[in-house]
Length: 333
Image (cartoon, rainbow, N blue to C red; front, side):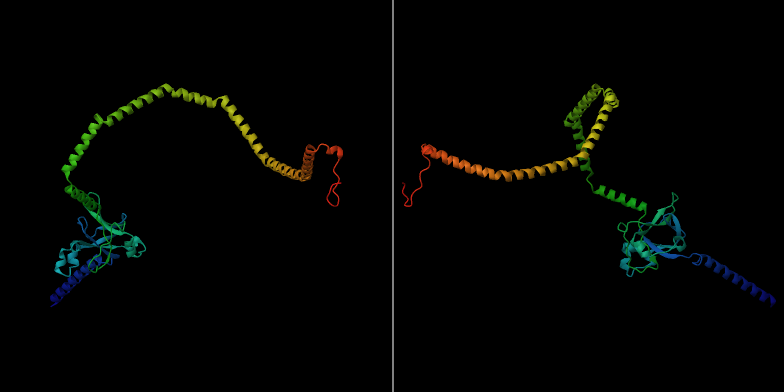
């Protein structure tokens, strides 16, 4: 009886220990030791190199880690079977947790998304591993993708990785080349090369090159004959010579004299203006005095003219005097 009770006690103790261990494991792996804000994003590309526990970084600083990776078709099944072929249900959903203590005050995430906050898979060296990188990019170049389901967490839009963008660009180039007429392009390039060879061998281009060579030879000969070093030395000697210093001294003296004359100009202008005003007043007074005299001279000239005309007509009038005035009846005596 005692052995059965001892075995029961041992069994209960073992069960309690297992429960305690499981609780501890659940506690250590649960969210109590991993506080943070849960987000999710969707990728249209391969997430190779990303796994649960992968770091989430903002401009190289670790701020969280990946908590779950799955397929959209399993996490958010389409409402109808016909929607399975839509590209949005062929994406990968990645959930990650961000530690608020790493980023400080958390502002409005939707406002940050509108300003270009995006998630990108970034390679981690050449090991094949990768991490999730948060960064601000052009919101117009990488617009947010709407989804036809209700997400479990706040969604931060994703953008293609650098490798994916390069691959897409190469594919576009290859697609353009596949539609191009390479034979026609090769023919046109061959024709262009032939035309250039003809121009440089016998055409106007050859003549232009020959003319340029002749011009350069002539210029070199002219430079050699000009003896530029001697000319430069002569100019330097002239600039440093006594004549140049004397000319500069005279210029300084002339400038000083001009400055003095310029200072005297206002007084001279004022004096000239006063003289002009006085001359104008004198001319007015003289004109006022000469006007009566001129009028008298005009009357005297008129009388002399009349007298001269009378003497020309009747010279004896000087001896006889003036005729008597007529009588009352108007008859001469």
